[in-house]
Length: 294
Image (tube, rainbow, N blue to C red; front, side, top):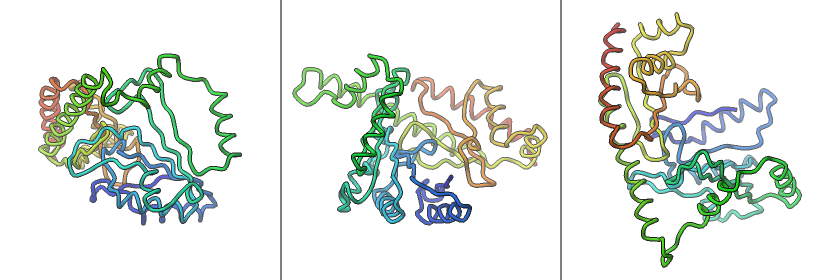
């Protein structure tokens, strides 16, 4: 059962939208068991406000839904007015313990400042489940293939990073802060670049590794996409790839409010390559809009 984020409020997760989708699912005979929330967000790059998180926790408790909290981008926060708060911490601050809400928190070595996708390391914390259910979860996890040895070692290091007083702490902190500072600069540069393009608006790049700008395409471009039997944002993304070699993901692949078009862009190219990428993107967009001028 999908739900939409509110672009007008910086990709906030409105409880009214959750209620609407839940009631719609019930009317179709669908039993909803859990709510998945990604914070910081993918593909939208937002960081949820703590007040918003509290409303989500309250909603899950009231509706008896398991809260599946994908928090793999928790280190990736780039704005000073936002902080990451784990859903577990938020729930506990509301006085909700193990008997009040079921919560699963996910973490990965693939994101954050480590970004080791190929190691396939990750873990989850399961709270608020009975011993019988936890036993079944453990059983399922045990019969799956595990990460290789290096992935397991890396997961252990992510869970227990160097601490103050450790020999490697200073070099670790310097490298970590350098990576995150660079990602923040890349995010801001791309955010500003998108907002300078005709017909494009991009919410603030608050966290994660992505921007999700909205593109208002000319009717001629939309009709050309329809003639090619493809979604308009996919049409734009393909033309961008062919013209520049820049890869973005169409918003239609994630789901978006009908009648709106987006692309997801990562902030992962090396920082020194960002200016040239922005130039190629800008030149392409200007030519595309001129070609399909209504």
